[in-house]
Image (cartoon, rainbow, N blue to C red; front, side):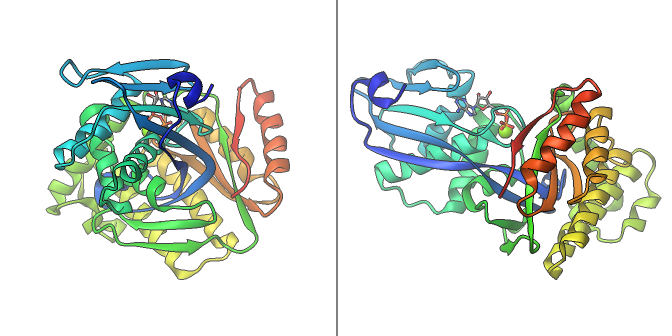
Length: 354
Ligand code: ADP
Ligand code: MG
């Protein structure tokens, strides 16, 4: 299916945005901290034309789903809420958006923690930017995408996903200060590539666990007398807090320090050690891992050619990312998956290069 078959017309513009994977800096973005994502090769593409009537019409090739949105009626649910959310936040910013036809197709896995939602928002906003000649830079696109997701899809996300989908590329790592939005494009450690493997375990508790961790971090910051945990750099500072706030704060502080370390131009081995330490901290202090993720990470860390591995995304299921020897990603993933799936899991490869 394509735009023309669905809408019986030729689209006016085409725009795209990649998915992303976070290499280091997990659960730091809502603490005003540092993150280190990269874009993945998979992309979401939107085709947009003008609608012949007063409604917006959206079609998703992956979901094989239609949505018709009448702006005078109630807000849409499901995938249309992400797209219509982008239209609404542009209107709130003072732009006039005419009714559109939008066709979306994507190779970003949906719901696997590689940010298909932010890719959809950034692609939609880029599409509307070129269709209507809107004066928006890539940072503004990311901020509007985040607003769309919070206000219209009901997900209280940080800025990591949208900044990564809007500003990162698959050949580099994006160092981002989520408080100031200051950023640096960094090369990967020499002779490496990344592998992302889905654990096959759904992120069942991710929503409630995420909200609970956010509340714990806010309480920890309050008790330490700082605006956000980003304002503390010595992990010992956390020791004065009661449990579990002590452990939670220790993770965020040490994780921020690990991301900052990357600015020192590390070797693959040094970078890998930071990823391993990040996983241990997410498992023991932040308590967002599950046995399947621990097992997958353990197998990855013990496979030759792997420099380091950790869970990526919010946790409670989802995917793991590893830094591996350049050119070895696919072979390593095969060995690891063989071992992991023999233990009864249904893991699969999501990304096998950079
Ligand atoms: P992730 O961002 O990790 O992939 P989310 O749960 O945040 O997972 O977002 C997934 C949701 O985003 C889907 O349920 C759907 O509503 C929307 N979405 C993303 N990509 C597409 C697409 N290609 N077509 C339709 N909806 C999509
Ligand atoms: Mg998402």
